[in-house]
Image 1 (cartoon, one colour):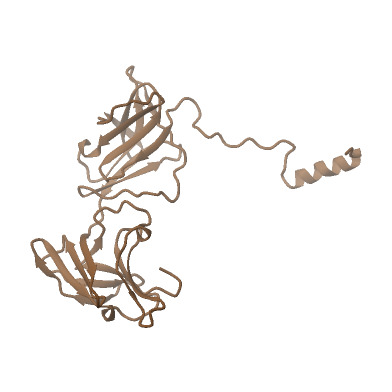
Image 2 (cartoon, one colour; image 1 turned 120 degrees about the vertical axis):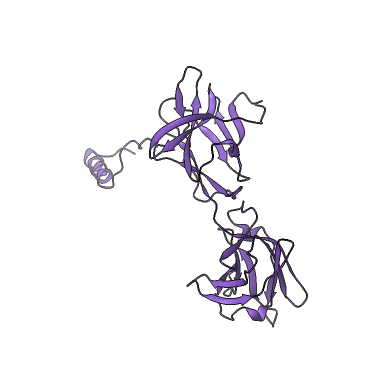
Length: 286
């Protein structure tokens, strides 16, 4: 259809008012500018080993220490993988081999034989990772991304906590918890997630390094929407390896039906932080 010059002029003015150019704007580049190596996968899935794959680039995959924004020593990553794909450079490196430090931060680099060091670029990391990094050996590793897109790795002390090593419910819905790492004089506590108040205490029986306690459904305060964290003394009770972002959907824990059998009155749940909760859910919620 042929438009008159006047109509065409009005359409152009409308496009300008709406901020729409005649030609669509170019999308942002999917990769880093220049020839920086590009990461395709990075994770510390078991809390100790770095799995890393980078598009094929000459050099040695390494970590470079960062200290208040200053770069330091370059440490080559020793891998126990055999590289058999010509399209990628890949490593599986034991992070326990790095120099001991309470907290540290590294950037991932590719070191060339001639002394050139290039930062490894990574696309934006997803907001909801399918996997999280569990603590191991008293430290917690975390993969990150700098404002400039460089792949980074940070180490910090692991959150303190006791570890749930067993849980079972009998036919009367009495739940028995077995906990490792609790202090000898610790007691079981339910701590209100809303205000931090201790709502319930129960004795822990200690034997062979494992503390045991029982909870009945009637022990837990009867308040719809209640969410309480399980503690052994001052230590929250955690998963041994919190490798899932949503462990509540994948880990089977006890729950108690209401007296009429029509709804769930009490549930035990892992939340994303890996701490065990006892909850009285609202209708229609887990």
